[in-house]
Image 1: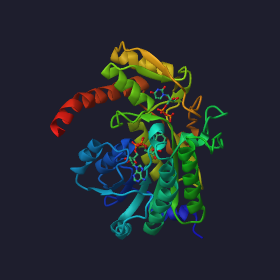
Image 2: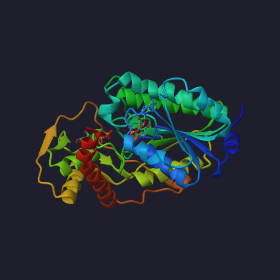
Image 3: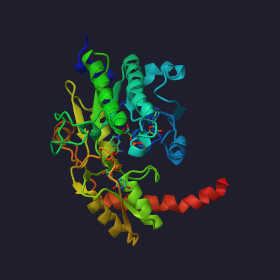
Length: 345
Ligand code: NAD
Ligand code: UDP
C-alpha cells in the first residue's frame, strides 16, 4: 500500500505550466474565482459544471480565456469518456460542485446528497486514475449547531441527520469520509477544506444567502430580511482570501488525514452585519423578521490555527473592504439587469 507522502510526491507539489486542473463547480461563485486564479498562474482548466446554481455570466467571463474549457456535466452521474481520456494530463482535481445556499441545496435534497456522495466518489476515482491530487470543499456545516466555540477541526460536530439541512451537512460528512478512505488506502492524495461563510463578487444575487440578500435588498430598496432575532453569529471571509487558502492547501505537504478550516475568525451577529450593510448603502428600507430556519446554527467561528501552521495562511481582507467591493459589484450587476432583460426580450 502506498502512503500519503508517496502519493503527494507522485502528484507533484510544484506548479507545472502544463498542469491540467479539473474544477468541478467552476462556474459557481468560489469556483469561478478559482478558475481565474489558476488561469492567471499559467495553468489549464477544465471546468465541469451542471449549471444548477452557476451564474451564466461567470462562465461567459471565463470562456474567452485561453487554456479554459467547459464541459457541462452532473458529477452525480459517471464521468464522460472524453474527460477520462484526458486523465494522463490531469494533475489536480478540485471538487467545488454543490449548491452552497441553504434554500438551493434543500430544493432537491436527494440530488444534493448524491452530488456529495456519488459525485465525490466519481471525482476521487478520476484523481486515482490520473494520479492527481484531489481537494474537497467541505464546510463548517459538518460542525452543525456547534456546542464548542470556536470550532477546531478535532470537534466532531452536532449535526441533525434527519433535518432539512442534513442532505448537505451529512452529504459533506460522507464526502469527507470517502476522501480520507481513499487517502488511507493509498488511492489518492487528498486535501479537505472546511469552508466557513464566504462572500464577494460573482455570488448569485438571488441565491438566498445573507450577504447577497441584504446587499441586494438594500440596493433595490426592498425590505431587509432578518431570520429570527438576528442574534445568531457567522464569520464572513472574502472570496480572494478563500481562493488563496484553497490554492495553498492544494499545494501544501500535509501528513496524514487532516481537514483544514478556512474562514475569517471575525465573528458577528446577523444584526451587526445588517448594520454594516445599512451604513454602506444608506438604505432606509425597513427591516422585517422572518422565522429562523430549522436547525439554523446559533453561532459559528473558525479556529484557523491549523491553516496558519500548515499553510501560513490567514485572511487579509477586512469586512469593511470586502463588503464595499461586494456592494459595488452587486450595484453594477443590478444596474445591468433591466438592460439584459430588455436585450433578451
Ligand atoms: P455555488 O452554488 O455558487 O457553486 C456551486 C457550483 O457547483 C455551481 O456552479 C453549480 O452549478 C455546480 N454544481 C452543483 N451541483 C453539481 C453537480 N451535481 N454536478 C456538477 N456541478 C454541480 O456555491 P459556492 O459558494 O461557490 O460553493 C462552492 C463549494 O464550496 C461548494 O461545494 C460548497 O459546499 C462549498 N462551501 C461554500 C461556502 C460559502 O460560503 N460559499 C461555505 C461552505 C462550503
Ligand atoms: N439569514 C438572514 N436573512 C437572510 C438570509 C439569511 O437573517 O436574508 C440568516 C440565516 O438564518 C443564518 C445566517 O443569516 O442565520 C447565514 O445564512 P446563510 O444562508 O448566508 O448561510 P448559512 O451559514 O446559514 O449556511
